[in-house]
Amino acid sequence: MSHKVTLIPGDGIGPEVTKATVRILEATGVKFEWESFQVGAEAFEKYGEYIPKEAIESIERTHVGLKGPVSTPIGGGFSSINVALRQKFELYANFRPIRNLPHIPTRYPDVDLIIVRENTESLYSGLEHEVVPGVVESLKIITEKASTRIAKFAFEYARKNQRKKIHAIHKANIMKLSDGLFLRCCRTVAKGFPEITYGEHIVDNTCMQLVMNPYQYDMLVMENLYGDIISDLCAAFVGGLGFVPSANLGDHCAIFEAVHGSAPDIAGKNLANPTALLRSSLLMLRHLGEFDASTQIRNALEKVYRHREKLTKDVGGEAGTSQFADAVIEEMDKAKSATAAVH
Image (cartoon, rainbow, N blue to C red; front, side, top):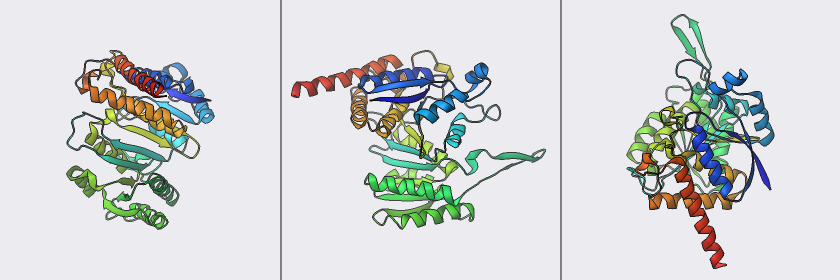
C-alpha cells in the first residue's frame, strides 16, 4: 500500500529538515507518494497566491499533509499560513505531546504531558479591524460547537490511550461569558467519562503551576490563544521547540508540522536539527496506521540521542542535518539486522 501525502517543505531551514525527514520515512519501507508545494512568500512570487490552489486541492485529495516551518511576517504582510490552513480544512484540534529525549539537559526529566488546543476560533483567529485611527478591535469568538468538539476530542483520546486526568484551562473569572461557555461545555463532556479525573485551572495560575511542578498535569485542554502560549511554555521542559511534534487534526484532514521558526540565518548550511519535524512525522505514521514504522523511527532516534556521536550542533554535536538523518537510518538498519538474526 502507498500513502499519498501533501508535502510542504516551507522556507528557511524547512527544505533541509523536510528532506532529512522524508529520507528517514522512506527508509522504513513504507511507500509514499509525495505531492510537494511551496507556500508563503515564494509561492506568491510564482503564483500570485500565498497558498496555491493546487496545494489546497492536493490536501483535499490526500487528506494528509507534512509541513516544514514557514516564515510569517510580524505586524504586517500576509496572514499566518498555519492559521489559514487550519481554518480552511477545519483542523480543530492541535495535538502537542511533550516528552523528553535522552540526554537533552532540562530541569524536568521524564515529562509526559499532552496539550490539546482548540484550533479554529478565539482571539488567535485574527479577526481584527480598526474602529477609528488609533483604535483597533480584536474579536474573541467562542462557540458551543467548537468548545464541545475539542473537549470530546481530548476525553476520547484520554480514554483510548489510558490517560487519567484532564484539566480545562480558562480565564472565566474575568471573561465570564466566553470562557464560561468553554468551561460549561467541558463540564458537560466530562460527565460522560467518569473514569477520567476532571479539573479546571485559571490560565495564569496554570503557567505558574507548570513551572513549579509539571508532573501534576496529565492532559490539558484549552482554547486557541492559551494553547499557543502554554504549548510553547511546555516545550521548554524538554529542550525547546526544536524537539516537540505537532499535529493539526480534523474530521477529514490532518496536517503534521514542525512548530519552530524557519531560522533563515542558518538556512542552506546543513546545520538544522530535523528532530521536531521527524517527531511530527511519527504522529503522521500513527495516523496512517503505520505503527511499526513509527516505533522503528522513534527507537532509532532515541538511540542517536543516547549515543550522542551524531547529534547536530544545537545540542552539542558536530553532525550536519544530512549526517543526523544518516545516523537515524543506520540505527534503523541495525535494528532490522538484529531482528532478522533472531528469526
